[in-house]
Image (tube, rainbow, N blue to C red; front, side, top):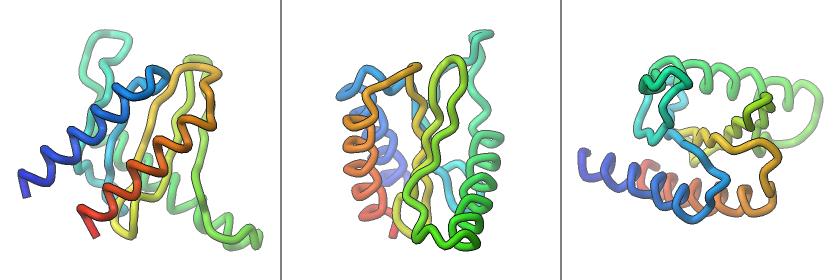
Length: 128
């Protein structure tokens, strides 16, 4: 299993290296537990709490899936949360994981979505 974690962290770091608008990322179980992360330091220089990020991301994903179903919008593709300092994008990564990506403000969303889609498929192949 530790080989998979190393492979997943490497995937996250490669995604960030390929797109300078991606500032950090994490892979989260659908139950809300951290699987792998490459999150940036907080504004206070501390490590981001991947446990809290994971729990919140899974809760947001779950509620959003329910909303999409209730409002007949098909299958949930992704969730974008916009803050003053950038975006948080959540995307399913197979049946067992969620990919959380942090971006700079006003990123080129087309390229980010391409990166997210490619990495999500690789995550699913490893974890499903």
